[in-house]
Image (tube, rainbow, N blue to C red; front, side):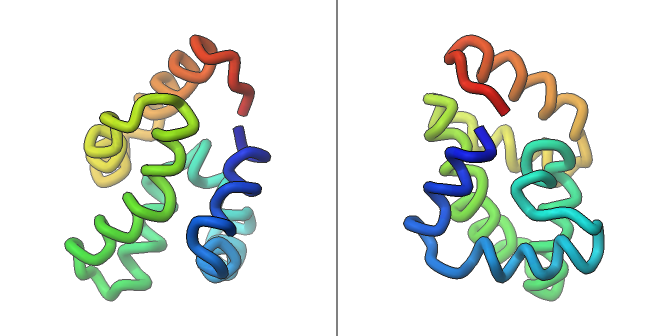
Length: 110
């Protein structure tokens, strides 16, 4: 799944993945796709921090850049709001469980 996202995201929003990778690497010593798939709330925090705690902007960008492509890959575009809620409330374990369930149904590997 990480490989598919790494191929898709640069085509969807050129340069944004590299941009947020700088933040992710500085703060958490890992790339943003790893955070997306393992610690969703940490990635959301980085986006929120970049937008200076402007929740509306952070929610929009986080959904557009990260959650929508992930939901599309999982074949469940309707779950973006639920994913955003999980990220904002720090429910990374619930997200991981959902990701495992959905990806196994589709035969997608992380």
